[in-house]
Image 1 (cartoon, rainbow, N blue to C red):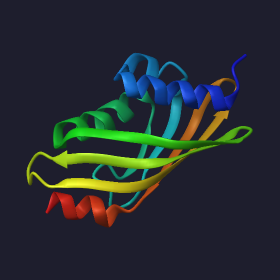
Image 2 (cartoon, rainbow, N blue to C red):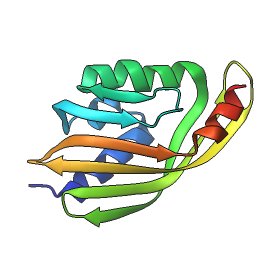
Image 3 (tube, rainbow, N blue to C red):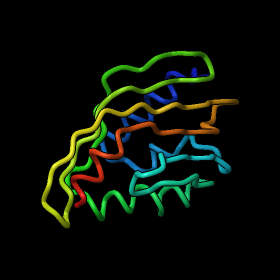
Length: 129
């Protein structure tokens, strides 16, 4: 069985390839995916369908070249922390954004059960204004 660290690393690798199916291969059917208040996709989204619709499709529609660049992955057993940077250009304003970000993943039984994002939402908001 793959470790939580490997599951999250595989998710990020799939994201780099823009492989949505592989990104969600290890996401629980009842995952609680929380985007920080003040972020364009703020709130807790439950289940892969909501996450895809309310997070990934929104980011794809509002941002050109939106990406997360992983700097390091911290192995805390069932809790894995991804630290890195967001980058993108807002389609409506043409402004670029670069913001530091931390993702906290909770993995149990080989599935991602919880995800929580922490980022500087002011930098994102400025690019949207």
